[in-house]
Length: 434
Image: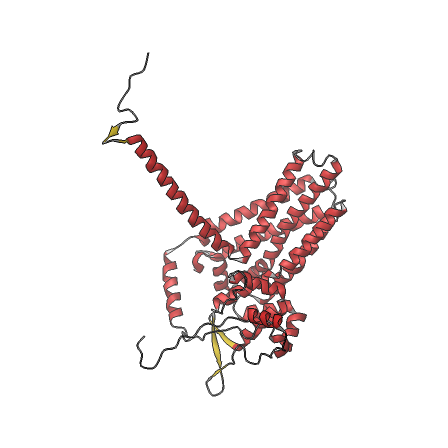
């Protein structure tokens, strides 16, 4: 027996239109608009995220970890048995995957270690200027929080524990063969490293360090008032000289940049207000040399010669890409002091900054040092230096550029491409209204 119909049928017409078709059309159009706008906003956000060179490096790191974990999973589950029929081949690839994952996490810990040690020194010293630096790193909005010293110490201790657990884990995997590694110790170290990483991130968000209080608005207002009372008559800063101009004009700066790049870089970053000199020196050194050491130590326990050579090549490539650390801070220098952009790298100024460091890091460093020498740095701004008579001292960024010989067309094009762009100066006639 057929069941009686209750209420209106689904397809009821009114005025020649179907309610069901109308609702379906409205729903499909709404979903299409939502997907289009959501996709557009997501693509825009992703494009902005990838403009930061550090985000690109983080994406590559995550991609390498993801690929290595999947290869290790497929080897342990037997998915590669057809491709690698021999057990020795599978063992070599499994060992290589383990060392790659371990090396990537160890490098990440090493890169953060200098900053963590510096923050620990600031916590133990706890001077007024140290408190301001720590608040910028660990407190939301950079304002004071209740019991902030204790919470910062807990967070720094957790991050140190994560790093040291990773170092011990790397020492065991690189120093012992697969048969001699203690499984209990490995499992404990992996648990400690993973749990402390998750717990420290959650602690930074849920503790008073990640919360907002009523005093935050007062401190923001005081900070804004303090900034309004600062000097506002800033100059129009320019890069001093071209990228290769300093080889002849200032050989001393170039020699220092070549012979002691790490020290000169750290010293220049500190006087520009980008952090501690020693933290930059050690971090830059680790970026340029740690990958080669870590990957070659991990390759010692692999029997396959081709895999060992591949890991060594990867370490060398990562060492070369470590020069992008200087390119990242060059980009930060350009943005903070409103310096002109280089647009010869597909119109991306950040990519151009990194490319200059990859192609000729001493030249890029010499240009940054000469630019900082040319100005006075006050509260994150450049001001022209004052002479004895009170007038501004400074020369044109391109003054003294040696002329090129005839026939050096390629060199002329290269120099013109690498010259810093000059911001246009808009002038108006006397008596004209703006």
